[in-house]
Amino acid sequence: MHLPRDPSNVDHVLAAAFPTGLAGDVQSVLAVMPDARLAPMEPFEVEIQGETVAIPSRIYNEEPGAHFECSLTGTQQLILHCLYSRHSDGRVRQRHLEQIVASGEPWVVPFVLQLAGEYVLEILDVIGRGLVGLTVPSSAQRRLYGEFIARNPAFFARTERRVVSYWSCYYRWEYTVFGTYPGCVLMEAFRAAASEHVGVRWPRHTPPPLVGMAGGLA
Image (cartoon, one colour):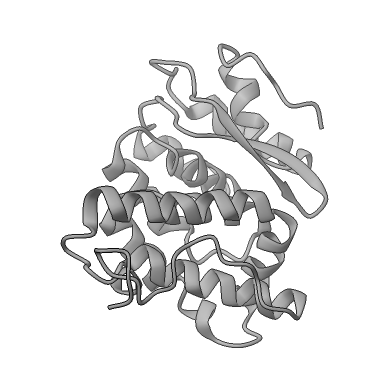
């Protein structure tokens, strides 16, 4: 897949966030989205079942009216919610995340996992409640996320490091032990899913869960 490098071509940037097999559905979604106020922020690349996609870090389109959304098919609505989970407004991200977090579609996974590395606690809570199967051995959710992480180790390592950074910067006084921070809880579950998928312990890029504020064991 040829990934766009010109962020001013908004439709091409947004279309590149999904596998090419969804191109027709993506165009239907783009047709109901209001024009962007600003160009999307720099995309991050991940692999989905052998195909590379580039998902924008943030988008700046206003949300379409409810009547436009209702005109879309189920798959198209899922695509719409994925795109708006990248919105610049955290409340918009959370609202659309709630519609995709339990999906079993492989192309939804990076949208959810990226949000697990962000800083809004309410969003982390939505992910934890929506991925209840992540902690269940051999569950469909665990296989789905384990396979994705195995295909995208660098992306997951960056996500882990972001979790540590946000905890250290904003939340370490509220969650004095890293393992109690919701972002750490999610990373442990994702790491277990990857370990189960590959059959060996997945490498850690965060402190051990019992590390406390001073950097030592609690």
